[in-house]
Length: 353
Image 1 (cartoon, helix red, strand yellow):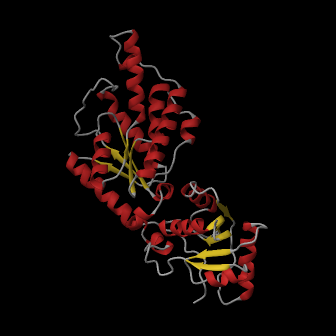
Image 2 (cartoon, rainbow, N blue to C red; image 1 turned 90 degrees about the vertical axis):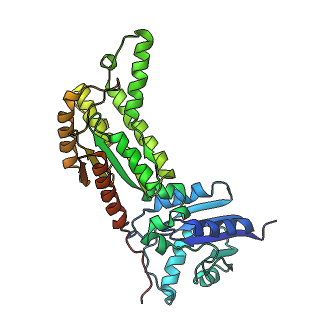
Image 3 (tube, one colour; image 1 turned 180 degrees about the vertical axis):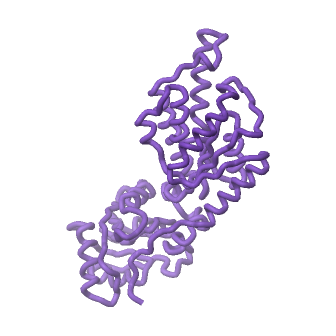
């Protein structure tokens, strides 16, 4: 039999980390039911909904743990009874009618919160010895605490770098080299995979078929975007702080224009905003025809189209020229600068000093 009928955990979870999960697990081990109240202010950089989703995913294995969310924009002042009343009203609305028997907390205010709910205070790892992490530390340097973040939280924080360029300009080589340098994930180009499948199907009917016999329609490019973004999102959950992507929806729009004369609204609307674009110049790179490419004569036009496409997207663009070593050095410098810039997250509401 559980020690408590109903436990409560309250926090901002800005963002959720291993310490939060340990706290919730401790409550789940001692309670028949647990309500986790996610209560951020609207000034914070991570919205309420993803935090609730992340915690639900992380604790899906304990179905007696319920995660609910409410925005709480009241000031923070642990010495003011009226402020306490305002916060507790938010928490009671989130918890509902069921009485709370125990309040689990890793914060000094846990005892007072429990008193106001007529509940038993249970302090868990107040000095952060079991799990040496805090939300403040994670916000200051997510990369340094990466191992303490769950996959969906990592995916939210990950810096996505997209490599684009004309055929046979080294985009795949660059993406793989960057991933190796940073020991992280990279996402291959789905469009190339689809081209190979289409050509194989053609050759099953006509063995002499070439890539120039492959046909494309709007649905094909929509499929490319869907599959590419699904692969990117899956990789983001496994990735380190940097995720390298070989192409994206903007690049797909350029290819759709090449084959169908224009890019569809659906493909254009799917464009995301990565942290950085790396554009591989065609000059100085020998053209290697692997049987899946249009031809060398298109590369200059394609480079210019990529340059124009990226110019107004609001994302930094670094062009890569010279030898592979020079290109890689320039790409690494740009990625290092991106990581060094860190993550700018708004401060939560804090008590007066």
